[in-house]
Image 1 (cartoon, rainbow, N blue to C red):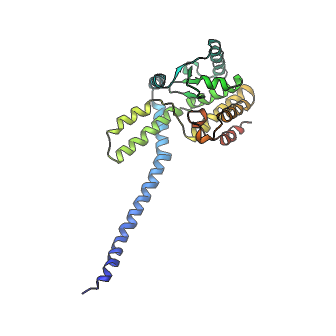
Image 2 (tube, rainbow, N blue to C red):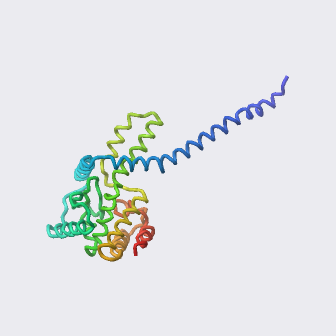
Image 3 (cartoon, rainbow, N blue to C red):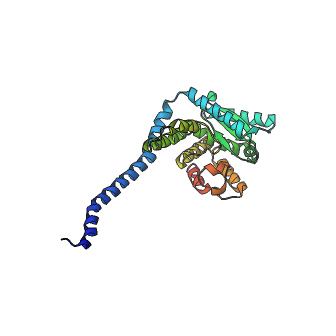
Length: 263
C-alpha cells in the first residue's frame, strides 16, 4: 500500500504542466492584446478613416456641435468686431498655407471660465471666449488655431473615434456581449467636451502648428508663448487641469521640446 504522504507531491507534479501551459497562454494573450492595442487597431483606424466619405465627417461634426450646444456651450459673448477680426485672420492663414478654404469653419462659443479649442470632424474649429481673451496677440491665437488645424489635416479626430470603437468592440466580442457594440459606436461618434488624443497625435499637431508658424511668421515663439500663458494662468499642475486646453495635451516641457525642433 502506498504511503499517503506521497500523494500531494504526485498531484503537484501532475498539475505543473497545466500551470506552465496556463502561464504561457496568459503571456500570449497579454502580448497579443498589447500588439492589438498598440499596432493593429491604430493601423486599422488610419486605413478606415481614409475610406470614410467626407459627407459622413460633416454629419458627425454637425451632430457633435449640436450635442455640445445643447449640453455645454452657450452663445459667444465676443463682440461682432472681434469675431470678424479673428475670422478674417483665419481666412488669411488658410490662404497663405494653401489649405482648402471650404474644408474649415470657425465657430465661437462661451463655456463658463474654460479656455479651450476643439477640432470636429468635417473641419469645424471651436474657440471658447476665455481662450480668445487669454491670448495677448493674434500670432498666439493663430498658433492655437493651427494646432487644431493639424488635428484636422492629419485626420486625428476620426482615427481616434475609430480606435475607441474598435477597441471596445473587440472587448465586447471577446467577452461575448455583442449587445454593447451598437451603443459603443453611437457613444464614440458623439463628440464630447472631454475629447483627448494620444500623445503621438498631440505631438503631431504641435509639429504642424510649429511648422506653419515658421512659414507664416519666421519663428515659433508665439506658439511657445501661447502654451506658457495657458499653463501659467491655470495655476495647477498638468494632471489637475480639468476642462482646460492643456488637460488633454502632453506636459508643457514635452511640448516645448517638440516645438524647439522648429527653432
